[in-house]
Amino acid sequence: MTFQAPKGTFDWMPPRSELALSVREQMSAPLRLAGYRYVETPAFEDTALFARGVGESTDIVSKEMYTFEDKGGRSITLRPEGTAAVVRAVLQHGLHHGPLPVKVWYSGSFYRYERAQKGRYRHFSQVGAEALGVEDPALDAEMIQLAAEAFASLGLTGVELLLNSLGCAACRPAYRSALQDFLRGLDLDDATRARVEINPLRVLDDKRPEVRAQLAEAPLVSDHLCEACKGYHEEVRSLLRTAGVAFTDDPRLVRGLDYYTRTTFEYVYEGIGAQTAVGGGGRYDGLSEMIGGPPLPGVGWALGVDRTVLALETEGLVEANTPRAGVEVYAVPLGDEARRVLFDLVLELRGAGVSADLAFGGKGVKGAMKGADRSGAAYALILGERDIAAGAAQVKHLASGEQTAVPLAEIVTMFKEKLVK
Ligand code: HAM
Image (cartoon, rainbow, N blue to C red):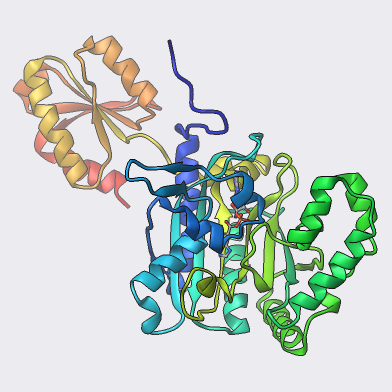
């Protein structure tokens, strides 16, 4: 029997894997320039952390978590997202007692038991950032700008930024009940009616046309914001405008996680499957308390690596973002003595910063030269018995076929000059 990657998952294989790596790199580069520090938390946590943090009534918690009991009888969940875990870690290590905001970023795998399709996987990758301990519209604007910057640095032009404010503990309850009153009057199926009672904001996110059609007159959160939330949101918008970050106000934008307050946003991209969000985030001023911590406001985002790679493929930006793969020098030994000499020389080349590989497996000249061609190397370094006696190796430029003998003692310096920038 043979095995396949489990349903809803896929393998990152070269060269796509190298594109994904470079995407993660470019998503985190702006963060590092802005003082965000790298953190890594476990791939699993106590189930209760997500149940409380993300919210029992969300799809993520109620339907999509990989939850199991470990051998010690604990309920464990593979992380469906990073924010609750990062806040847990910051509290556990007391970072919030130091300088604020605490600025951290992370990169890793996340797990959701979703209906698998293009762009929606059960195992996926995010690069995320969180800034904790400060409520300042400039921090929200910085966050939003940093993700926009990351997408722009990849060359993507089709990413649209949607922006909303979900209000705060003071104004959200009144909006919630106004929305519930409206939704109770609609013609909805039982599951959606139940949702109206436990999580009415999520109904606004329903994608079915028959539901959407009825939502045209739904009350908007923007009409129910308190003065403080209105002022805060206005400031975020104005800072974004000054920074040249284009955005679209979307008063219907609600997010799939319960912890959001005030600023919420999503980066969307059309044409990469049914799912359009390539990233999303917002402010979550109550999350710390929801998981048993002190009041600790926060704002952050997570960008989807998998969907961003799909977007790059859609825009023809694969080559521009895939680093050169393979080695530059491919050494071909003819005989045992030559193999010993080249083995050392290859290590020396690498030590000097020149990428180099050796024809392993004693394939003979023809097989080894084929290997050189396939390796994508610029040069073959060929050594036979006569060359050893002469103290030189043959350096062959593979594209032109041009070949010269170079003294063994000069090989490293020569390649270093030619190839190391
Ligand atoms: P999220 O919107 O659930 O937010 O996920 C962020 C991004 O992860 C999405 O925009 C999408 O690109 C990617 N993503 C999510 N689920 C999948 C999936 N099943 N397959 C492929 N890609 C997926 C969060 O996770 C929040 N923790 C973001 C945040 C950080 N908010 C504040 N701080």
